[in-house]
Length: 495
Image 1 (cartoon, rainbow, N blue to C red):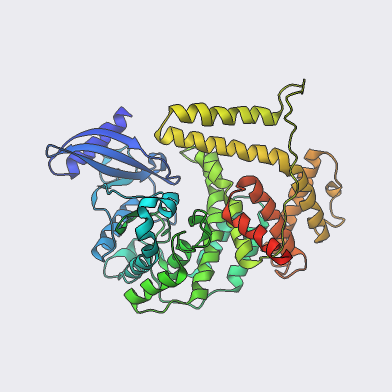
Image 2: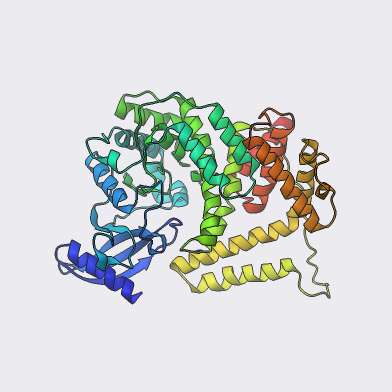
């Protein structure tokens, strides 16, 4: 860490007038794809707080398909000039331009702004009660300003890629397919998106990750728009759909814009600033795409944990959130009756003379993480201890629900016509044998969706996907609002 801070201090001395010394550098929680640090420095005799954003693990190569951190810094500068609230960029770090910066990776230093960035707090914090109802309208105006930026005049067209909607769907679908995991609801959604492409529009600057959690808010409203790392040129309605995607409502599914506002307010702000009418169905398309895109993106976090430079415990936990996005696709595209298989609850009467069960061992580690580690740590270590405990909760639910879930899924796949007379492994036996058979059946359904041989309106397909995804998200995240929405649909039919 001493070398890291020394290199960072050299950058600050070179780039910032009147810089004297770096007092501290603390990595903050969150930031699964990039890292953010709080810096305290003495500048012109005064202690000041700065922010340092760098590539994960200090990487020095730009990820394919992304603009890179130098371009991200330029985007922030251009956006600020267009009236978008942004922190001032103070220094850009690029070891290719300055070899002495080696060890820091790609990144930039910016001013530190005060405000709330945690999406769950923006949705619920009492101190934001007065401003929350105005955020959707304000965000509509901010997005309109972003989309009116002239990418040619500002030179952004040389820094960013241009994506058609069809190309973006296919790129995302291929990225998921390259991960080698059969998730039929993702393939179903990809097919739907390609079958329902919206009309072509004039390509505009797209932030592409404008959501609750990537904005900073205080009692006056939006203080800053953050995280331009996936910006491109394309359909601007992508941004409106993404801020409405259920993953970023933080449990407030009744308030579709970020968990704090309504569609009409968002659209009104956009229309008042731009003079362009918003088509609600066009935005809904991108809302579906948002859940599809994040379903693939979360799975990619698991692959990054296996092979990437930053094997944080946070990454595989995020990968298990793919089922959350998939249940949102279910609710948007194929809502209908669904139910949960019964879980096997281990007896806890304390009378067992056997060795502690797997469930009890896992429970003891969860208790240690939550009651001991979290109580005696803070910052990122405390955050990761919570993530680790949550991951073990998933393991416990998997132990309890997976056997019944697998058996029911296997039966439905056989009823759909998968595996008829083609492989003796489909005859069920041991648990391991059952798991292999189920995986083969999932792959067969997945491939039939990918090659188009199975129509999306095949009788029984929507029901199977609803039940499979419902029961998976009940294991991965039973408190997710999308699961409550799916289950409430069935109860509504019964009432």
